[in-house]
Length: 224
Image 1 (tube, rainbow, N blue to C red):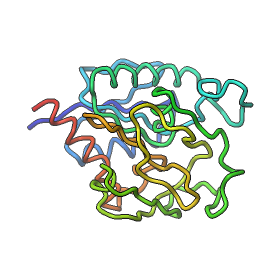
Image 2 (image 1 turned 90 degrees about the horizontal axis):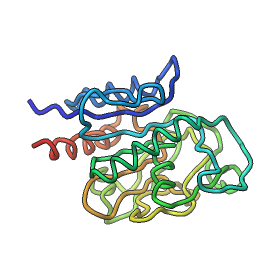
Image 3 (image 1 turned 90 degrees about the vertical axis):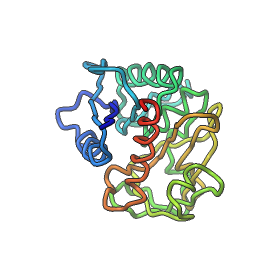
């Protein structure tokens, strides 16, 4: 049985909740997963795909030098994940960015972020919750639209940063009711998808599991 190896990045936390959820979903998709952190950045074998997971804010100095600090940051994790992203992009490895992972993917490709969304939200709440309390409006004729099969999907929200300027080679494939970017995808060959919400906390929805399944299918195609 073809079981690709997917790397999942994260911080050096003693309680990596997101990793456990992501590992469970990836296992259900029939792949192996390994956890990569600043202290343990090397995978046990060549990766067939990578998930850049959620966590602390990205250092605004990476995309907006004059921005004030607004939340905890992890510079060691930023550096590790930037290296991992650049390597994956250069190698054509399938990439899924989740929340800060989507943001960092965008920054690596030359884009920028809103450092704090609270001032620009009008129709959506600033409340953070892993529950599906917000609405994703899927852009038609995108890979995400094909993947989810629905024009509107319920999503959660645990962020206060988001993409403001889209990076090179990326296109917006989903927004919320305020027009804030919720998903970006690569327009070229290969699989690169960034989602602003946390699908790993919504595994009871088939459309959310489909996001991980698409990453795993792309990884399998590399090893076929």
